[in-house]
Length: 622
Image (cartoon, rainbow, N blue to C red; front, top):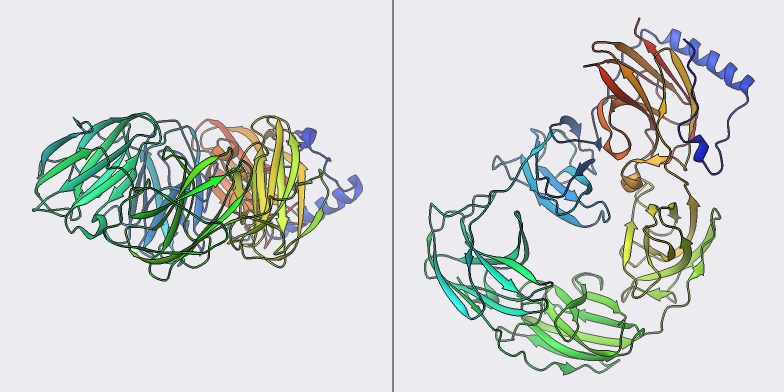
């Protein structure tokens, strides 16, 4: 049967892939066929499903390696899931990340099943998207595991209405609702306006109270929590600023799961905060947090300083302490949080660059990460505005160098800025490589204060270099920041941006056909290229129930991996795959169709950035 199809994304490639001549390809293919005949008796090696797309209802086996395994899961808003990871080899650990920020953990779990080594994570998405599940061990050890994903919806919790200026008496007992970890709680509903402050406290002689406030629609998401406010023993307290108008859930629980008893809950107007002290520019300020220090906008013990700032003038703010883990917060006059930092000053010190968008008075809070006390040093300095960003040309390698004279992200952090114009929907790939430091990329709008829309640390898959896939959300100018992970790296680097063009669409194939194509940097990458995901091509085909097919993938220039499954793109669900079934670098996969239907075969590589020509043979099993 004659059925030869072109590379699925060849029409949109910029530039098109370079192919060998027909004569050399035929010669190479004859050698390949000879190799296949010689190795026909070799045993098939079937790899485990270590990463890739996963769906609700799936159960896969995998191995963590030392870095863990990532699975992409597409969810609709409100489509809750329960993810279970079980292992007899390792102490399993689960976490889930958002599609736009691979550094922000949305939820995590260690021993959610209560059985020692097993994890159970329940997640309720507040927006639709593709989320990343990371399966790993708590101590980075390597081991086998089983991962399952199933539907889950949180139980509706009855809330008692409460308002500012009132109090309530409650009791925790065996009839109280429970969290996933088995902790009893009582819940209250509180309406707040945007920027409104509220002082919430829980007192008890029977149990060690824990307070939390957050959203409950329907899964509870805490925005602030407290156990022993400023060393007050069994009592807890939160001073909370509402980020937006609406209903908030206040939960009272105990530090021990089995604790029972009565409690008193007070919701009060916060007492007026102590006036903020003007902070001198360029002069170190020595202070001390004590138990009697009032809370700030952040709701914990904090010293407050006022800063009169001009729009566009950056300030470097540093907080150092030998007594506690330093934490910085910057707020406007209404208490809305504008910037925070924990450890950018190195060790347990905090440092950030704050650039106001308008003239006015701003509040700096010097506090601990938690409710610790002790001495500290605060320094606020006006720094030179960053130089105008350099134009980043398309498809051109630009050499640069990070030095101590570059623009600042913090006390030690430095970056070089580049600017480009993008069109809505444009797919761009930016790479940053360096032999001198651990490269990191950030992309944000050129309008207003810089805020990263996308970041990448190790997208090239070698732990040092970055590859960021960025789909332009709207037409306009954007800034690329070339920096180092942790901020302290210095040295030479190369940065390059290419237009990947429209997303390559899957091709088609039939049993008995041969496809010749090429992997290139213009192809798709799983998960947006995060964590070194390799390039791939997808091909659709149809099969009857119990139809037996053999997939042979030969690639002279990369370590070939062939996969068969359902779905496409980041929604690809692997049912079987092979890496070295034919030889050390070529793949052979025997597969039996479980049912009548449409399937996808994926051509990819074992290495993160491998490219080159390949031949894919699809034939009935003899």
